[in-house]
Length: 207
Image 1 (cartoon, helix red, strand yellow):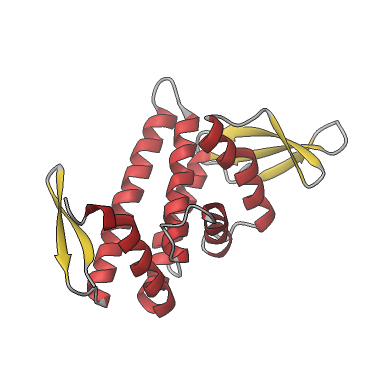
Image 2 (cartoon, helix red, strand yellow):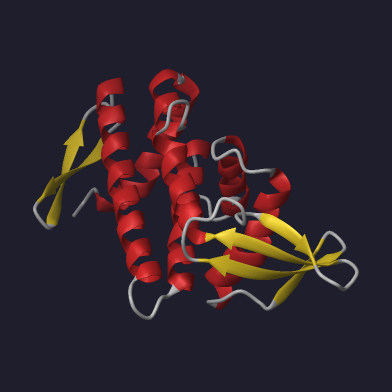
């Protein structure tokens, strides 16, 4: 069985096929992929959020796309179109340590609407309540994932700091006990990474 690793050569990439992905190759591939993705996430989101004419929705889209990637690697499935949201939710709860209720709101209020409709709806109904939303471009620990009541019964404002979401995604990978450190120790995660990594890059085999 062939496994693919990506070898960077300036602005272009070439494919190097290897017969087996041993643990050293696996971890090298993981570090390279995750470093590239998070460097790109941070750079592009900084450009979207802190330059003139800020564009928060593309930043959010990149955040949720990155979480989808991490959920695929963590869950060992980058091929099946069904279950993407559940794998992302599992990553946010188990690795990013977000409360499950807040994760469901993130997906309901922001992810699903931005992915499919290009922007969030003004408000959404969830669990018998109505939620509008508020975004902070920078890092704000006091407001991130905070739910505030309004003057109307069963209506709330769900607040999020995009800058802190970016930081939390990156920290979930590289901090002690984060995904990468767990990948170095846990064979079950190594098997799942190997499978998802193959599925992600299989289309490049014959290029």
